Length: 384
Length: 166
Image (cartoon, rainbow over all chains, first blue to last red):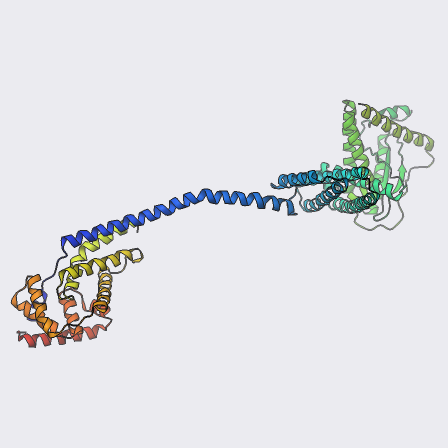
């Protein structure tokens, strides 16, 4: 290093005064605490604001949620908001003060249930099935209520309007119920099956009444290959010389056509005969395009209901037996909506191959006896 | 790095550079101690307020000198900065009064202040503030080779004026 550089390096350095130093340190401390206080205050603000925010959110949900629950088509039975929807509907109903207004509300709610049923029919689970059944039943109740209000309406014009409106709604309901029945087939849960069958039955009867429909849809009693006496065991004993009795009256329907009743009464001398007859019936249905699986499914379901009805009678529960018999009848009456036909059969309807030479008069008597027994059973259950 | 740790780091750096920055300002405000203290406080306050965004990987020295340099320029803008030759005598007196210095150093500082700003800065930053050529170049926004050249010229000029031996 040169001389000049040595000299330059010797130039004195200053020192920050103590006062200035501490003054600055104090400022640093003050700024630090200010910063911390600001952060803490923001937190406090948030904490203070939190209740306000919560209250605002609650108010919003109190106003918006009910609106959404009521207006949304997606809110169906099983949805958490459904009870809110029902509560609002109850309020709506209570505000209707004249029969005409009540009819309007009932029909509106029935239409809503129908739309909900359609939505629910897209789901495929046991819970959805049960919810669908419940929705369909509710729809039916609302329609009945609407109809009942017609009696209270004095104005003739309004009465006519109400009758036509309800008739239109029922047409739509029938169409949709048949579609749903076809979609689910016999795979539906028992609950849903009964609900659909009974509603379709009622709607058709109403249609029958309105259109003066006189064709009789017959009852189905099917016994399978069990050796147990059916609930008509008393009838069996009246027919002598026979070991096993099975009776079946089956509707075989061509898709798209009206149902045609075919009575096929099977009198079998033995277990094998009964089996043969049912096998033949199966063949016929298969020829019509119904799969063997479907056939077995249908018969099992009908038989199951009859068994339960029998058990109910045996235990003295006639109300239950009555309900089960009605379910069986409804299902058998409307079986065509539940059966899946693979091909559109346009050929002749299968005729019973039972020999006409067999005791037809006793068969007819027997059949009449069965009908009498059912009426008698119903009478006993009603009196209880 | 956590807030507390970073805070401690700032204080540590402050302790290390407070006298250097004070010296920096002192040599550039006619050795006015009170003004140098104020400017030092203001420079460090600016640094503290920007400390959160400071990248600890960078050199604190470069950073604080840059802040001080810009602060000084702002100060010059507000108060005006022109040192006439008459003032250099006063500067020398102040230098002698405020800093313990020999007569020789007094002469050196008088000659330094007679130089143009660029020469003066280069010499002061190198020999008073202890910065390297690269750091001086960054601070003055000049090329390093230019700073080296200027340094040689300044030393040669000073040598001539003082008639000192090599």
